[in-house]
Every structure is written in C-alpha cells, then in structure tokens.
Amino acid sequence: MDALDYVAIIGAAAWTPQIITWVYRILTQPKVSIHLHSLPQIGYTTLGPIFNVTFALLSEKKDAILNKISATLKHESGATYTFDWAGLSEDLSEIENPIGETVSVKKTSLPLVVKVLHTGVAQVFVRFQHKQFKVNLRKPGALVLDRFIFLKSSGKLKTEQDIEDLVSEQVFSEYMKHLSSEFIWIAGKYTVTFAFGSPNKFKYKKNEYIFELSQDDINELKKNIDNIKHDLIEAGKIDIISNYEMKKINWIWRSPELRKKEYTK
Image 1 (cartoon, one colour):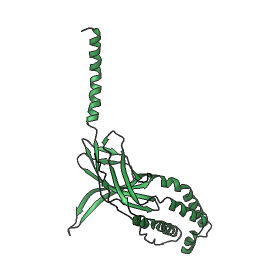
Image 2 (image 1 turned 90 degrees about the horizontal axis):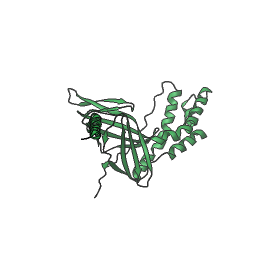
Image 3 (image 1 turned 135 degrees about the horizontal axis):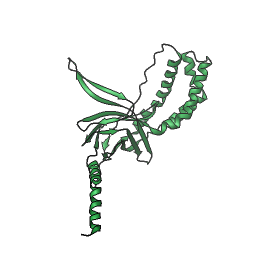
Image 4 (image 1 turned 45 degrees about the vertical axis):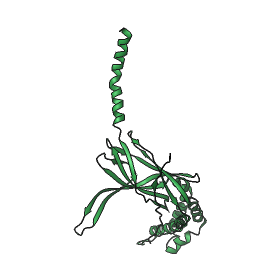
C-alpha cells in the first residue's frame, strides 16, 4: 500500500460521518400520507370559487410541520385552477355529555401551520379559495368600496332603500359582471392534486383524485351569484343602519363524490 492509498483511506474516513448524517436524515424524514373525506364542499360565494375538504393526515417516523396546502383542479377540457388554503378547522377532542350526545371540540385558525404527530392522526377541515379570484377582483372591488365610502360620507346612505338603490349604479353593475365572469365551475370531470409545503424535508406520495359536476349542479351553483348580490346589500345595511339584523344567506353547495384515481397497467 503506497502513500496515495493511505491518503484515500484517510479522505474516505473523513467523509464517513457526513455520509452517515446524510443517510440518517434521508431514512428519518417524515413520510406524510393523506386520506380524504369522500364528499368535498364546492361552492361560489362572495369569496369566489370555494373547494373545501376534510383531510386525515398521518406522519410516519417523526412529526411533520406543514405550512402550506394547495389544491390544483383540472377540468377535462384542460382548464386548470389553483386553490390555496384560506383557513382550517382541526378536531381536538370529543366530549360526551350526560344525555349521551357527543360534542366535537374544534380549533379554527388561519392557514399558518399544521403539526402532524407521528403518534396519531390529525383531522383537519381545509377551506380552499381560488388563488386568482382576489387578484382579478381587486380593482373592481376597490371601485365599489370607494363609491360606497363617498356616498356614506356625503350622507346619501341613510335607509335600507338607499343601499338597495346602490346596486343599480354602474360601478356596482360592473362589479357584478366581474363576479359572474369569475364563476369557473362547468359540467364535467375534474382531476384534483394536492401539494404540501414544509420548512423541513418530508416525503409525500402525490395521488390524483377525481369528481364530476353535472349541468344541474352548475345551474344550482350559479344561483349563488344572486346570493352574492344580497350578501353585499346586507353588509352595506349593517354598516349604515344601527342595530340592523342581517338576513341569513342560504348559500348553495354541491358535494360530489371525490375518489382516488385508479390507474390501469
């Protein structure tokens, strides 16, 4: 064995701890898997297109921290939409009262982080909103708000009728046209994929899921456009009229079966 062989051995030995560390980190990376409730909530509200779903999240080997969840919906026509999480509710525990009813204790929070313990299952209800909706409605929405503030400061908004008359103004009509154009749901089959982000490395096997909307579903969901108009009017009345009791809006939702896509060999 010559000097070069000794140098090679020493060099390899120097790298061994680092290699062991790399291997250890790879082998101990948390592996996140998901199970979905088969009935998501699909809708269209003042917040735009909505896609809500309940996850059961599991993590193997060690705990995992998730700081982002998104859903990509692709219609069979090729149209693709990205939905970001806008809020979530997490089941913490269940309490059974003396008469036998079980009450779930939930924690509702902003979309910051979800901690998935390797010793249990995290069940979360995630509210997804269409990513592009806020961007597209920012300018027309600002125009409506500016007009409302101007009329309010001018003393021209005093009664319920004043608020209802506001919807006939052009700026409001234009806003409603924009809202109608942002209605993305159409009949047919959708493919859904979920993506998760974390400050730490983790493993996640990406699966595809599918659901279908019928034309009847679309016709019903479109009725929410009128609901949005009523919701905006009610919000204006609350702002102007003291002690006004807001009328409830009956939003229309659809819950098609969401199933895992099976691949044939």
